[in-house]
Length: 87
Image (tube, rainbow, N blue to C red; front, side, top):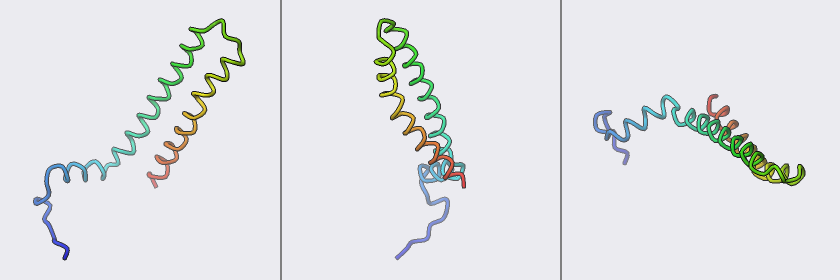
């Protein structure tokens, strides 16, 4: 049997989560965190390249590509999640 509840019967956590869900704050947070982490990953790659000037170009590209490649796939999935959630 489903029990009907008034809005005032819900706890503050349930009301707070409904407020977050109604405004899609979690979706926007995913996008902001994705962009912030992208900046951090690109900064790391530039710092790595600057810290290893003696490494040849192919090895440098392989290391940076090994880090940025999977991140680009993850970021693409996050953007897809965000764009599909807006519809």
